[in-house]
Image 1 (tube, helix red, strand yellow):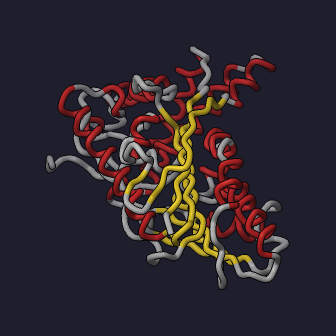
Image 2 (cartoon, helix red, strand yellow):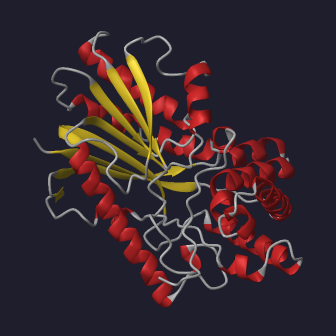
Image 3 (cartoon, one colour):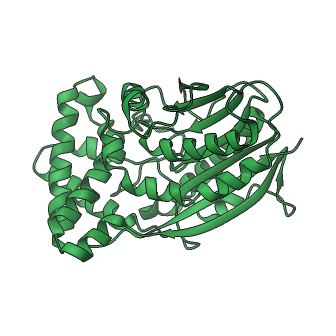
Length: 358
């Protein structure tokens, strides 16, 4: 690995930013709730506590609906007395304070009317063991598995895999493939026999094209402007790479054999859905290009700015003000560019449902 290749350890922007601006991922997760209900119907519940794992919870708001669906579906089978443990997992740098504040005060919190539901959190990458073997009845992961575990190479002139070529592109493909295999193998270990896992990711079409490519191009251009004006150094800009791999349906089903099996896992279902951009729907009604641009720019900031900023020397040294200054300048430049060229982000959503054989 090149010595100047910075591995980002950043999660989403803190202080509840992801909860406020991740409207699009919430919509993508909603498309898979019916899959979650159907998958839980076949899970053997046995006796004792029921464990639901939320892999990649971030700050929790987008977990409320799926966890609520999972709990209500389980309750329909067990009644109110069985304890349910909900385990929210994310990186150690995640804003878990925002998660617990939400679980304590949000009017739609899933444990509000159920005293036998017990939330907890785990600060660890899901590319490691997260929970004990044969422990999880129901697993859920929404929009988190788009992140690969490491950046395998710098991308000349850009920040995203989609604009890479040659050996750099091949390195990302290999990393994305091996990480997906690792993710599935680890979850197979943690699932109970008969347990289910539903994974939702923003996807690319079979040609590898994602609707997010446009906003990535705009952000890349803004970073070029910031380099020219001296806001960031050329070396910092060169080291900025997003460890994101938008997955095609073919990538997600590739580890499974022709019978849909991967070790103890069985591929029960896979689907590609189109998610309309709610911000664009608002724009078509009110024609407010600035509001559309601001929504898209804040979405980008909440999710991707911390990873880009991890290439900045002052941010790595713990200078919080340096992150805010960087993110503010990036957001302002991105908003201006997006306002000048209004465009939708109708995106593909990939859904995969697996279960563990008894």
